[in-house]
Length: 467
Image 1 (cartoon, rainbow, N blue to C red):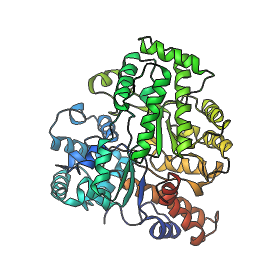
Image 2 (cartoon, rainbow, N blue to C red):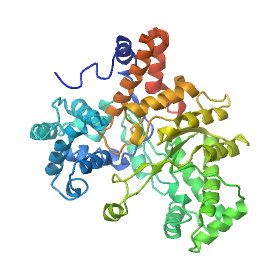
Image 3 (cartoon, helix red, strand yellow):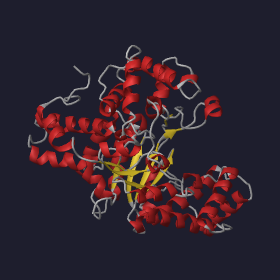
Image 4 (cartoon, rainbow, N blue to C red):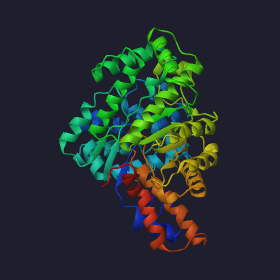
């Protein structure tokens, strides 16, 4: 019998009924991910299992290092099969880590392989998967169709040309692939060389000269407008914490001018500049009925030696314990005072913040949109069983889970779509256990539609992807 069977993670009859009748067959709205748009535009074909399974997966690299595997087999130049073999040797040691579940789901759902992953099965897995990768069903377009992915929201810098999104839109592919506006690099006035290089690219792509702070905002807004034209409906902001500071446009203009002249902003000056720019983006979002996403709480690039050797996003980021709630509240309030607070989803990487954050968000519901300001799904180190349950419990207790926009992959890998299944099974088990325990009515006609909405419909409606 396969390790992952039909009842995987479903511990009651009610959970199984919810999953099979209301969640399992719903399409996917993957509203936030890091898939390369070029791979979709080119309908990428994967040459071997390494390319689609291990090539960009920093979760797996972290586990391999923890298992005593050298960097040569993670981000180094070892042969692709040798990297695959190193991962298969690691998997038996990932018991109770979500990677054990994810890896077996990936092999089952994409390749029909239900072997336990280990050194002894590595050859068979490699050969069978590589054979099936020749099928059109496992090209980039084939995968999106296979998993009924209706929407993909990629993550894009304002200086990106979006040429690949235009190619995708013209290709006739059924999946709607849209850009997400992520202006993080435009906040870094404490790093003048990087900021000025980025601002020069912004000027070039927008076709606007940038001599003043007003020019800077005008160029940035022109890109926001272009993203909207291409189909973008969300911004995203990857921050250790939210910015807030009392400031003026004149003060921020001075900071901008100093940075353009090569003078690094102080911590207080960056706080003012970033807060002001973020408010501007928030107002543009509100005008266009976009949603503003905050990914907060990551402590990045902790290992200086490894950062210098192999760069960022390679598995050396962790959870920050920086205070979050006060400045986030002040940021929201400053925008709400003028009625320009957009829809917001916050993904907090520290689940110790969940209840305080979820309670704070309720202060800014105004009755205009159901679930207007909400605590997003378990993210990164928390997109596992306990993290998801913690997030759903906090949202349920402090707000209305009925309007929850559900799961996203937040992934660079085309193999990540079973994470939606994983989430849906956990969601159904959570509700199913409550039904069996008498904590909510044992009534599928009441609970089932809510589960269906959380699985897909809420996100499609909330973000404006469904009429």
